Length: 389
Image 1: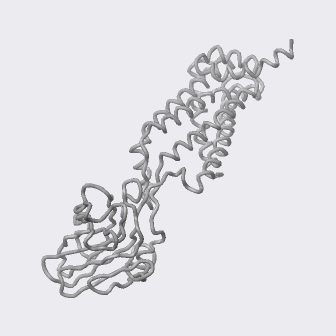
Image 2 (image 1 turned 60 degrees about the vertical axis):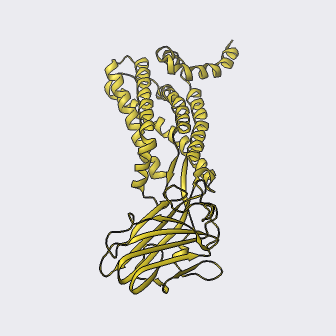
Image 3 (image 1 turned 180 degrees about the vertical axis):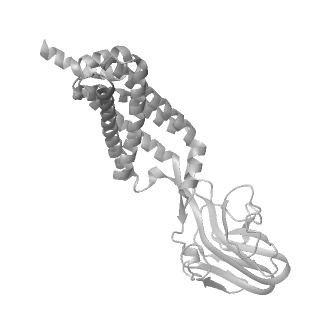
């Protein structure tokens, strides 16, 4: 009989894991009578694949902008005939004193003129459709002794042919004052561009870039360009380090489960010893409290489903942490926060019920201990993992 009962135990623990979610009062009564570590271990083994699944799905929904070329190549040299080449209606020089990225900016200057342009050619062929290189970023500065604001036009060419061009008015993007760098990013293949037709430049074959500034009066003029690149959004899941990120998430998820469980146990044990006459075995308390993490199974499964339903997130190149937070909170932050709060509240309720069944505490005391233990376990485990991992 004992051997037969032992064979049934693993299935019993599986039932407890899920029954505790919808019938916690009765289930915790059974768990308190026969506490065993197998239940929490099963919960851990179930949650780890869910963590991996959620991380993989989120990796397909987060897109990072990758620059081409890298390392500010196009504004660190005036080029050569075999790679890329800058030219202008005057000489193009490198400026090692006034730049934003790298060690130089490219510059051109004219005296007593009302027009200045700089053109980059021989860059190869870029497919600038929405699915490929969908953005162009650059820094631009203009200098005019009279401080007049120019008309500014960005041009893209195909086949290095000036007649096959597409134009965009960027006058509203450049600085309104002379000698001020403007950081500009424009979307490509949109309706704002002028001249797109079968006889003009092709979005799938962009081979040159031109910057044109025009004033109504003549003056001494300077035009500077820096940090110029095409941007392409690619999912995080396609990066070479994504496998390492999944491995890290797997390890961190397992450690977080164990650390959070142990901290929850320690706080509850301290509270029971301090505010009640409970004198049960500490290991039984540890095993029983492990079942409150059945909520993690539902939470992680719902989180993975939420990742599928939420819109993709596009993160620009060189994005700051504060900018990332703004983008994240504006799209994913609110629903994930609500789901997390719901899961933590559910965990607190299960913890209070477990305490009620472990020892005859009042509901108020059981809930307060459960709430404090859950909150402190979350805070302390997050702090420890951020320090250690």
